[in-house]
Length: 204
Image (cartoon, rainbow, N blue to C red):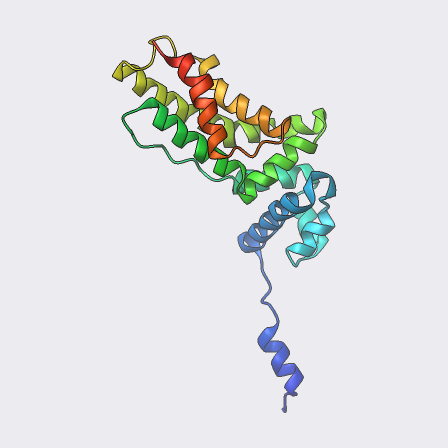
């Protein structure tokens, strides 16, 4: 049988059919990309399907709603925050942790997360509360706790500073100024926050 030139070229260039985990990963990546470009309000299941180069039915089979899809996309996409090394100074460690948190917030998955935080109403935001807390807030607080406890051991931080209010100060400030003030947390602003808020709060 003779194969036409068009059929041969088509067979060589046509994408292979994706299934299972490969297709799911493509859909989740497309959801994150759509969130970071068109935002929560602009995201549609049809748009995600088109970006993932699959059918709408393939998306709905796995995620019955936009909220379900976005929650899974955020869980899968948020970067892990690596522990900061012991730098010998609580100030230097806090600066490093805040820069890492900033970089996570402004990564593509972080941009998707900010779209959810900024655009969802109160009821919708509640759906993502656990994802945000477990994916970003708790890791940041855990790393802050480590740095502050090391500072206590060195004698540069007051002994009663390892408490929830102190640990909450950095993520609360970063989220507030990002959402309300539109700050993108340049290095100079991070340094000001550490020097004007955290260091006076921590000193013996």
